[in-house]
Length: 100
Image (tube, rainbow, N blue to C red):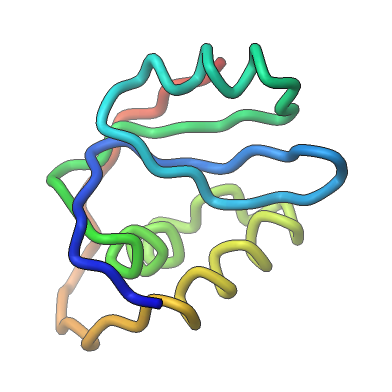
């Protein structure tokens, strides 16, 4: 189900072998994920507030964690659940990486 809620921090984490995209409005989300047993937490500060679909498209455009097939699967899943209209852009904006 697509939503219009926006986020300024996003990334991926793995819990009990399942990798998912995570969305937040504060980098403190990293501590909460760690505390709750998440592994391989990789979050970035987004260049602007975005919806889940826009974040998934941004991650594809910026080749976020392309070495991880699980991450790419999670991105594709989120994009299917939250489709966005295609945007014509020459290059994707940069994001600040926050590593836990």
